[in-house]
Amino acid sequence: SRSPSPTETILGEMASGAADAAEPAAIAARLGFEAMDTGDLETFVDQAIAADPDAWAKFCNGDGKAMGALVGLVMKASKGKADGKAVTALLNQKKG
Image 1: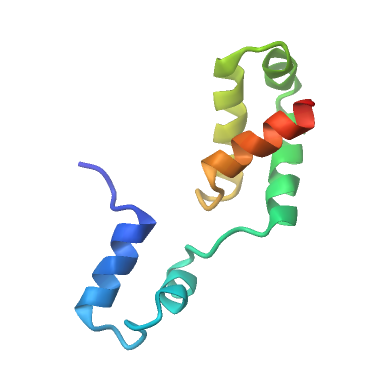
Image 2: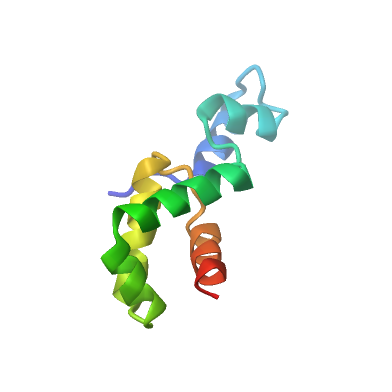
């Protein structure tokens, strides 16, 4: 069984009649789902590149599996709060 997505969790909170049920953004903030700051995301990406330079080199040479390793490092460092698509876009941007 999978964990509910942040969207499903927020909708559940709204349906439950929580005190902040009319404010999805307030629920997201309370549950720690708010969007990550771009600067924070870039820091996590830079840390992942520094932590696994071999994966970075492989990614730069077109190895898709290496990108997965780097995204995984960012997700671990951000405690799952980073947006995987944003991480991938930033890695591709840094690759040039």
